[in-house]
Image (cartoon, rainbow over all chains, first blue to last red; front, side):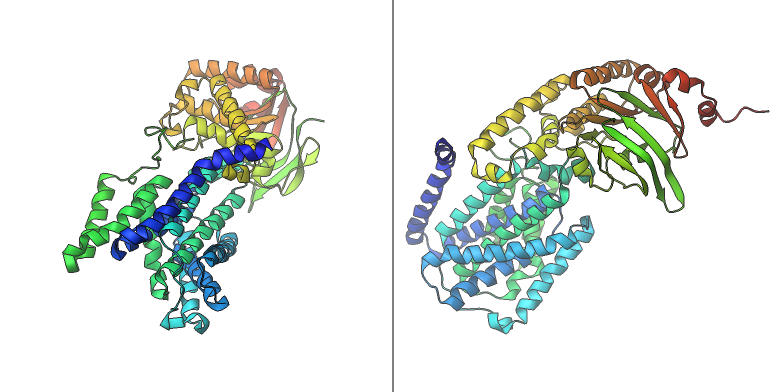
Length: 316
Length: 254
């Protein structure tokens, strides 16, 4: 049983952090006003989205523009789980998130297998098409509200659940890609032919990246649905995918901590710019351009923020 | 029976036959050279062995089993590793990480890494030691954490060899390892290749244009021209072969 003890010891800090986040969530809902709390929760959801897309785009190098599609599948399927079964207790949330995540993962698998023969721009176009198809299908499905949107979803998610998921997502992806086997993901981004010559089954890893990335996007969708309580296909357009891509690029392709940081900045920025009224999005865009000009390889430039290796290439 | 055997392999691209009826054998511990004028089909031969292409006719065997038609990663897992003519390192990864990629397929399950099981801890420690050892053997110890793209040309070539060795090969294919290196580096490389053969008991198949180096290094040489084997044998015999001289210099004028 020393194996179980070892696993428990290695994962103890994570468990402590998760419990702390849960408790913090209980406190925050009491002390923070609704507006700030909403921003903080949306940051958490965007962190999950950015990190999961980073696995596909930044780390494995497969340029995907369909992340809003996975987000939508997760949001609608998990909302359907609680709505149609009539679950309204917080205990149902893990189930709903799991359904959302798995539905999105299946979609990731289904998209991954045929489209991964494509590279670069072609893959981007195919995934963009996928995202739009998902949106249009939902828009025309009356069972989930169609053009009216889907309302009345029980509010089950909040700070605690969102940040617990974000922490789990980041830790899982970190351990995955910074393990010795996981270097394969980076190798595929760097040079696919050379990676295959190293004995790496590149197709398998690309599909895995798509499936895991889609799973977490689906979880983020489930959280969004159960935090806002209302879903409409307008929130899952091509622009939403682009927004997530911007977070990944701004954070530095391949940097998990960088994209989390970028997700936070890009969620707060539009709120801070409210003084600009109608010029808000112009200022936002100008700031983005300014950041990319001064830090052309993103905020973190592919490095990770970590205690051990502030100055070295990704921590291993 | 040699570890790696090509049996009358043919590969055509449309109307062009790039490799015609080529047979070749490399066993563990052997140093075999492949030479030929530009466009003779040498690199295509390497691509054929490593699964980039499948032969139209003929068979390729590793340890007696057919490998033609298998994807590249499977062939590498059977014990064939290669370097590339134009260096193909993972440019933004450190020297250490480049070598680690070679171990990746044998580095335990991803599940163990995600759950941080004891097995993952053991694997991590074991492979870290092996990576450092390979870097040291190829004089890259002091460049361990530098991005591959920042290394000198010679160091990049050595790193490619270290990375190939990390896959645990029985036979190593080197595609023009001395291209663009200085005479001094060539001498050093010759000694290094011999040492690798002795130390790891490797079979080494080497494409090279530097005649002095390949004649000095190899026990057997296969000469390709227009995709066909025009000569095969000991360096001393190949050097005097009339067809080889003609292939390189053109036929004697009447």
